[in-house]
Image 1: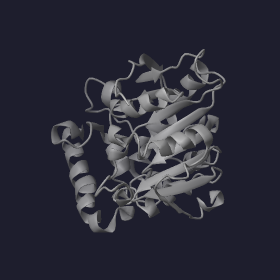
Image 2: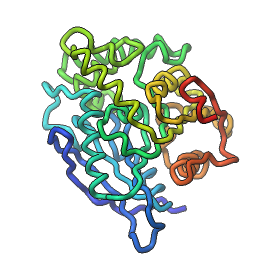
Image 3: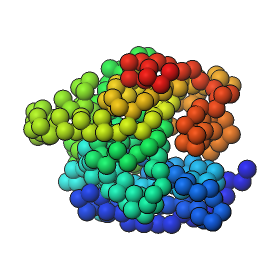
Amino acid sequence: MSTQFPQPQKFLVSAADGYSLDASAWINDSETIFSNRPVVIINPATSVHSRYYSHFANYLYANGFDVVTYDYRGIGNSRPKTLRGFDASWIDWGTLDFEGILRFVATRFRGQPIHVVAHSVGGFLVGLAESNHLVSRVFTMGAQFAYWKDYARQRRWAMFWQWHIVMPTLAAIFGYFPGNRLGWLEDTPLGVVRDWTARHPRFEDAYQNGRRAMPLERRQQLVERFSQMKGETLALSITDDDFGTIPAIHRLLDYFINSPATHLRVAPSMLGLKQIGHFAFFNNRFRESLWRIPLGWLRDGQIPEDAPGQLIATDGARRAL
């Protein structure tokens, strides 16, 4: 299959607080594509430019979906001239940015089912948006919120050093994390670094004290928003993903108490590979092997019968098995 794809339409979308977000949309001709087609929003991983997901967006577009990608504030084409003093956070990305994109999609694609593909923290952000009740189906890849004790045991201390010692230290020095010059993701706002490096098993507990303290009522409100999302979720994880371990995936799934969830765990060896990890899933080389899993899920709510992987049940995911 050709890797050529059409240039998407470009939009500036207002976040819930009016901040301008850079977004791209692949929109099918309504005369030639099946009626009532879904529109898919792609939520990136932390500090990953939305262009990384362009090949996957084109794949979904070629299979009849409309697709919207975007950069969170402070990332990629949605960053200000300087990140020093720009204190965006994961909470902002969910409650303001994803919320704004949801509102835009609900208006621009009125009447179409809204699905979400979410990578890493992108799955966490789904729960924070006030309008997440509009989402009818979700596919997540390695989705979690970086609680350090959930990291893969054999890599935990090395990852703790990199992401919980070096990253916040450099962010404190520069006023943001200079990821570009290190080859570690995009440059990242200081508030996001603080969220990533919080050491609490429940995300809301990181906001009890200190400069980021929130009133109890606000913290409870954020947690309750996860229960508003009632669309079905397929959570896919990779066995050599050091972030997306089983405890990490289930820690997040358990917040979505009203979303019927299925967890599919794939080993690289099932594809004759030695490694896939946390980021490679969206590489174009998995078009014929792994991408058909989210395609089947987003189109029919089903996992292809011959798809690789093992179904994993937890208290949060057992409802769907």
